[in-house]
Length: 76
Image (cartoon, rainbow, N blue to C red; front, top):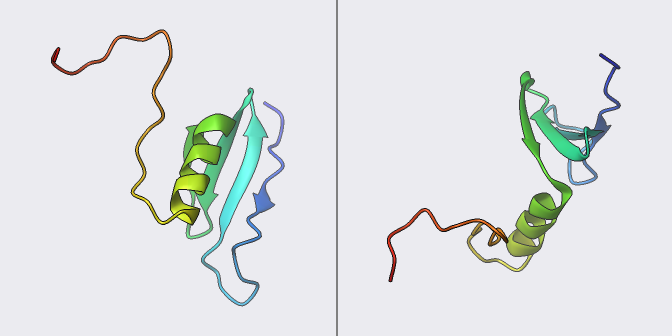
């Protein structure tokens, strides 16, 4: 398995050990925190972009609607 090229988030400060790192892998994005580097979250670029835009706008995150997939909730 090739070594991942982790990049520290520009929002993480240099004085703190609380850093978020990202790496590209298999067409997606991996995220980890510096205080738990073995715990890795995988997502897509689109979902990460949606989360960042939502947080910057001060809204509560809601997952984007998946196209071509049936709702898992009850019919209305």
